[in-house]
Length: 441
Length: 159
Image: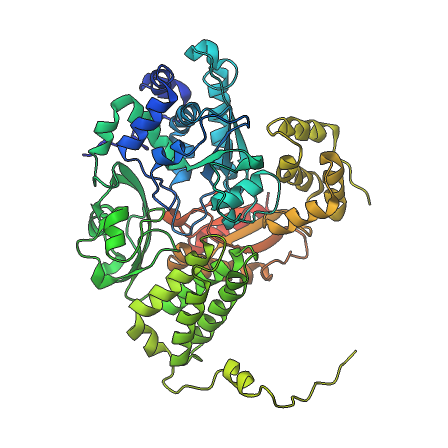
């Protein structure tokens, strides 16, 4: 049985005393006896990559923070977890909050900030309360805040604050998160400048996912070499895989990176109810390109392996769909989500997500034509790459890849007879006088 | 009808502003507090938030309308939120949603005549592994079937 790093199976680990009995808050002491540069170096060498979707090297991200600046610096922890299919961070808030706090303490010291914000989605009332309780205990014990200097020695202290979101998916995007934290509408910002230069209140800022930071204490305690040997060398460590949809035992499974997707579904997830065949699997949360049921053999769950098969690890949220699933309805539901969550800043995304939804609803009602399938791909391709943030891609990928990879399936759902779409009709009427409708009062 | 924060709530908001370099970041928390005190976020609540945090009322309005968790009209005593996103959908989220609609006789965004229940179809709540789900105000009910929904609604009615 593989050792678990982020969610060890220890009873009542969420209680500060139990956490301390199990070697808790020893990594932070060890870390504070070293220089910040040493810590960044260790995390870099460990190969720890972000668990929020982009799988970017955490140590490298930290190293972007300017060493000398007369501005304040900030650390943000992204706990906005709203990607459909992803439900891992709430397990950390519930079962291992102190390891997250310890990770924040080490990270904050490594990048030399004196304030860290944990942004948690507003719907997670229960988990916000659980985390706040843990944080209050850590303050009382002197691990956080002014008392740290006495407790941990040295001359460093940091405050940790919880910031509660209010139901906007886009705030999981790091620059939107910063705007939200500043008390503004959660609009993503244009990059560059990147947060490490110009983040919260114009100051250098690092933003990391909850799961990423929870790995840090283990890396410091057991050494980067140990961590770098777990799972796939290019994406080492364990990953919290969230298994949902048509599986017998849905849930979060912490397993080494590179675990076989089929292993996750059949061994850990107990297979598909009724032993049905799998039609489709989305491997990393709803915004990642889906895989066909016949593409799953030998697919390993880590960033590089999934890239090789034309998808992405995302947040590790695996959604399984059996052969009886109505894929058109599923895709229409996904499109509805992105239509709802588009912040409205960029025209391609604001308008395009609406068109994707309308087209998919039309197909789902049985009124679609083969032309609509091409139109879907065309609209999706015009969103992708033309927006400030990655929500554009998140909305476009599922549509583009689902329609391409399941072309036969979709063709069966549309009429072969191509009716001239309204758009073309309007186009052909250009230059002709269109009678204006009478104005009614 | 004007709205004023209670002294206790003013103190709460003032404490929250100390977490940040300026007052504005406390706006999200202040709106939650206003919503709790008033039941929903009315223009008066927004004006009060603006005056407490030294912001422009239009900026507070902009924030209120951006986020989905601020009620801009009165909600029921029990605000029911049913997730119908993919993972819930695959496990019967829509069945739950339709059932609740039928049972209460209201549609998305509506409130029952007795002001007991309001209904909202929500996006992913992070209950994918315990789908389908319903949230009643702040509490999650997960791994549901139709019978359990009936039980939950009954127990809420009798509370």
